[in-house]
Image (cartoon, rainbow, N blue to C red; front, side, top):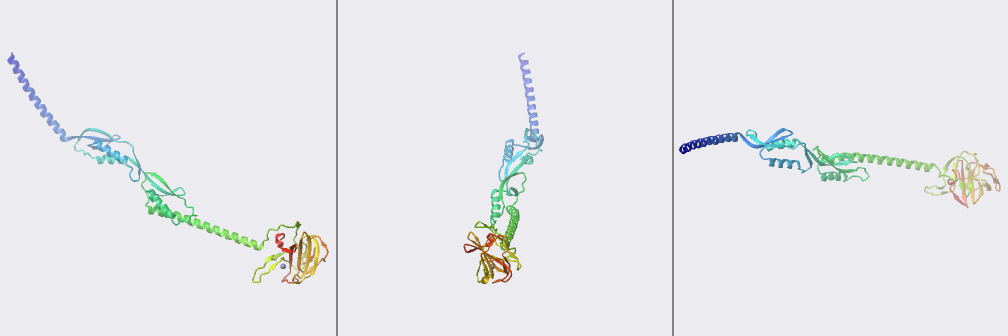
Length: 346
Ligand SMILES: [Zn+2]
């Protein structure tokens, strides 16, 4: 019995070992076949779409991180809409493991925002360059020979954009230079117009000064003065100028001979007669230290000692004495000193 049992165990042990050998060999064959056809790797997907296969997940994640967080040069920041997902599996060896494919897909899904510098004129962006130094250099060049009075308000602003189109320093300078030329032209035109206006105003003032009187007050030492005769001013009070400078002590009013003369105010005749270069002359005393002279008369209608009213016709315009044509030489004296009649009348 013992013998039989022993043989039975022996038999089955032998069979088990045989089976185990077969299983081991079979497994080895299967593993070999699998290893020849497949390898372990990561399938990378973004939003469910396969973008590639990589061997080292850590490495590709680091690469993506580095790419997204890159802020070198003009890059301000990067944003990616969706991050990749990884699935560890056995991958057919026919599929290539390429980090490049994954990076390409990541780059396509990333938006890069750049930081540039715009040169502005009156707050408006005129040219975009890549650095602040360049923008400053453009402004310095434009301002170098610029008239301070030209209203060219230049500035620099930071620009955040996905548009990589920037100007070179030279192109930006050219753009700003055109704006400068336009501004300078505008300024010079304005200045020329102002100068023209000023010259015209000065000419008007000169012509006014040569024809118009100083605004007369109509009042002298409390006396209200009136115009003795209507006519045109042919010679003013004061220096006549010229090489032989002489002083004109009165005001010449030209009008036709025989025109009636009224006194500048009521008064008393102190002189009525012919006196040298004055010709026929009337002198009237108005009191308050004021006297008036009427010279070159063709006729005298009043005589010395006579009191005359303001509206009385006292003489007629003529050209007697030192005179080249009919006019009234009117003199007004204050305490014996001639004053400018145009300060009071005409
Ligand atoms: Zn005169």
